[in-house]
Length: 78
Length: 524
Image (cartoon, each protein chain N blue to C red):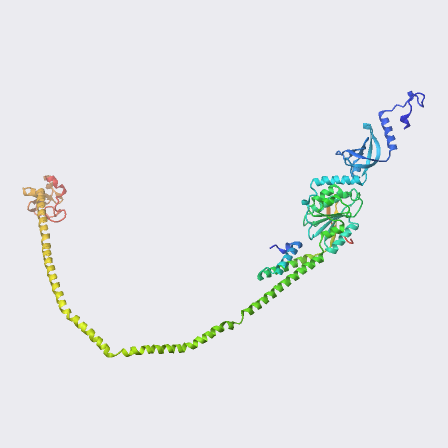
């Protein structure tokens, strides 16, 4: 099983949907279904955390004389 | 013009002899002044012929139509400012001024701007360039990278002011607010292409985890405009930078109907900047709803399954029934049989007693007595036969005993006689041998009148030897005699020292006695 914390949202979402499907179809034994449910809950929490982390930050790259980036400055009001 | 068309014939304004004499340079300079004065600024339409661009950076090319050719030059600075570079075969309208090149007796057009002659020509050139780049494989489908589902940082290459970046940020805000890095570029004019190309490469060059976060998606965006306005996005440097980008790239240049070459090299083409923002991020609320729905469905499924199993358990346990029901028939059977056990035993003993009665009646004392009497008679008869049989046995044993005894006596007589006869024979042989030994020993010599003389230190065989002795012993055949030598005799008998005690005793059994002394041989 892959580490949930390192999963992308898309992968976590895919697995969550697979877990839900398995549980709904009832194709897993009871003891495994509990482990599956726990993994599903962790996946859901991970997805929700990724979704909650929806911060807008707009920055503009500042360029040096040679056209190379030297840093970035926040941009307001766009 | 008149200068050249003056009639040089006599009778004219100038006498032939007075005709002005130019140097070559003067004439060239005059021509130059005339041409530059007359054609200060011209627009010439023609097809671009051979183009050469030496390392100096200046550009030399020909402009031609079906009959004539004019040499054209663009200096380095002019080339850099050109929106469209002349390419061979291109139909262009060149703007510039006429001049001469006196060094080669040449007139030429200094071109500071070139524009394609009509949109059709420009499109034809664009198509040619597209095909050339496509032939290199820059637009191949297998170069396309998937757009990340939820990028963390989005790099936008566009003008920092204007509607485009606002549209993008607005739509991102609606859907899923993200971190956005704007790389400011000119979106039209000469600077556009190199700046856009540098921005795309610059985003790619950012190290992951550096001070400036490396975007995981790039949007190259510009609003609508004329073909010329958008021309920078058709430039090869931009196309190559987009094709080389390791970061997935969405192009959103102009309106939906405008197609620029960067669209072919991009991983996705968005019809508008707003559409690019929609491609870039999913709708957060939808995802939240999906995730929550997933959680709800999962919980419901678990509850449902738990309930189902609980119900099934109830059903099954109902089917199992009461435990008493299982034992009842057995108990009933037990009761039935245990009730019959007592009477059965009683019936059995009664029956056995009935069978025993007649047999018991037969058992009486006189029956036993009759039996004893019969056995007694048999014993008496056997006893009467025992006496005579014993007598016969004894007689027979005595007879065997006598015979054995006679044989034993005979054997013991023979045993007594046998060893004596053997001993006599051996004794006789021994005597014979001893006699033989004696005839051979020195003792027999003594019998013939010889004697042996000994001193205290042993055998004496010479007179000189005997002279110094205090006592001597002489052995004869019948014994020994101690004597004193007459010369030195002091009247005391010498002590007899039997140094060789067994030497003279023949036939004795002592060890060594039968052997003469080793030096005895000297007597013979």
